[in-house]
Amino acid sequence: MQEKQDSITYILTLRLDEESQAFFDELRKKHFPVERNYLKAHLTLFHKLPDNAHTFAVLGEIIEEPFDMQVNGLRHLGAGVAFQIESGILQHLHHKLGDAFAKDLIPQDKQRFMPHITVQNKVAPAASKELFKELSESFMPFTAQAIGMDLWIYRGGPWEYKEGFTFERDVANK
Image 1: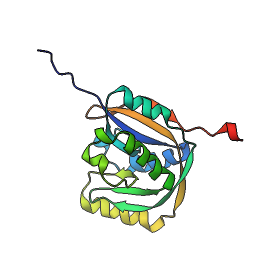
Image 2: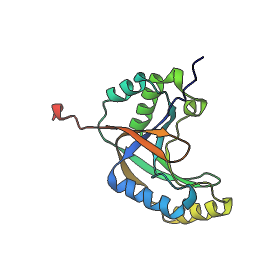
Image 3: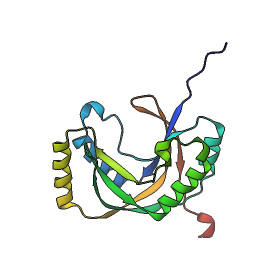
Image 4: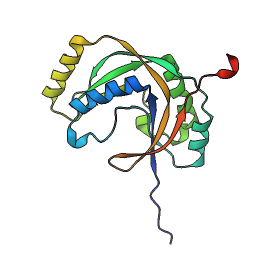
């Protein structure tokens, strides 16, 4: 009898422009519990993609230009705080990928896509309410740019970078 090999769990995130990434990373570094903060700030597209050639083929065929997204508010998560992201292009991209991976998606990835970037999580409700109030008082909507996607291997703790898929400007039509 052959031993069953553990399959790899892939997580797909959206890559942000450097300035936006630095902004969210700084907030995460400041407000996320140190013992749990072993990741940079990220916008998760899918929590579990299959470990097969289809995954890489689909992601490699995505042709997208960098696009703007609106950071339009804050969301209180109960035990944390996140920034809400709004973008029709992002919703379309997520839907297209969801269709391509439909038979492999876990229930969490089949739910309505509500893009966000978490800067605090797994803290006491009072601490999250305080940060939500603090950030809300000075919040002004702003624009962040999506410049690609990153595929990560999840191993129960820190993620291991696997591969990136950069969105490129369409130079053929310029």
